Image 1 (cartoon, rainbow, N blue to C red):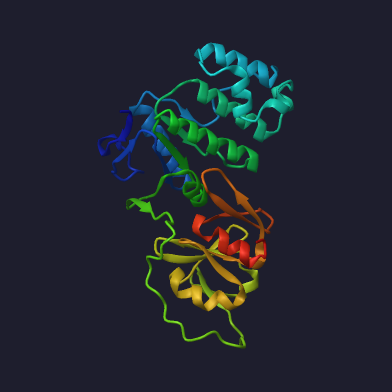
Image 2: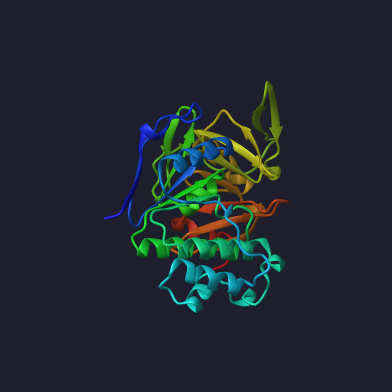
Length: 316
């Protein structure tokens, strides 16, 4: 049995709280933190374990074609997976004959995935593996994680985006100064207490959503909100990647916002349905919603909610 363990004795750092994490084989754990804490954790891991961290720092050969890069590392690492299969697995067929320096950032990222996969490292540690790439590349990475599971390889993913942690991890954790806590992944069951319904109003009066910024209280119109997410038990309004804290939980605001077209798409998220542009289907029954805002935000959609949301958009 293969496993990976982070021991609290390794945390010889003023920036990191002591914590322990045990990752069994065929399992992926994701740790969500800010970038400073993430960088410190990478430093600790590199000082204590002899395992390379995937962070796209190790160079590729820019003047060689994608196929030539794959062929070089295929031979270097002695990979037993046939080279044509590697090209297909990492969606590199269409750019195989292109010099690497002419490729898109997403194409280059998939070459990095292939290199790390062929290296045969066990366990695998990734840092921001899907930051800034396209949907095809994200899906390719998820398929790679499944292959790693099939090969009984434990995987640790470090991210600074909670949605990425929920998307990639079988279990997800939030690392902060006060310690590391699990992020509750939606299992399709309602765990929070029900709010008593007093009937749906037939008309709506002037209604604003209050949030705090420093010592000021700001009032938001519901239509301008992209989504609301739960952080440390509190609801956070998100508008184009800017977050504003509320003195409420998701459950408390959920009923108030239903008549404005908001929907509880995940245990940790309420989405403005008017802002949903796309329903993204990943592998292994994993879904996300793409928001129509300048940064094209994506948020998780619980697998138990996919049928419901399809009906709301008259897709079934």
